[in-house]
Image (cartoon, rainbow, N blue to C red):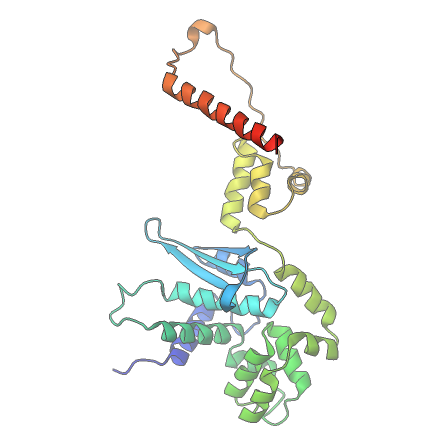
Length: 294
């Protein structure tokens, strides 16, 4: 039996994902929330340098069988969405390993399949046919391209490829539209304010929801400080404190238990450990003195 191409494999997986999760033909809004609430996957938006065009990664821990997707924060919201969908493909196909696949999958094939999956997930051909149901081939203008980009929150390049694949435009128009930029379309067709809002959202870091939930639960129990919660979110502790207070989330008050001296357990001192601490203190003082004298 012949094997599916990367395009066919990605399209089929995207259609199955939409079907399995009841997404229909509708545009997908918050991809981070969709992935975290529908799948056993943690997602984070990170403040990292996107070197060499790498804007996302997928990691799998074989010991805990936990999957993690990370994407870079950016002022290019459409790119961030396509990166998220691309990395989701790697997670669905378990591209981090070939050991459980009968035929090893080449890296190029995996990347092509992930690109196809992302495009068909974000803007399926059936969705375009529904969205442009009153239009036929030859009637699609630049304004329609702008509407597709605005509604499905994809780049003009992805929108142009999808429109061509669905039979709405030809190869020449696709090539012309693929080089357009989202800010230009948003400015020309009056939705630049919406685009700025999307930029603001994609430019913020975002902690994995499950991790943050556990941290807040720990804060309520009095075992995690507000500074720890703030470090997870990447914002000032004072801002987190105000948000938690406004939500009525406060640390549990633990009444101290008083014991008599004779009820306390015997304490065995580790003399070697204490001596090591003294040595460390002396070393720190020496370093401080040298710095002060410079």
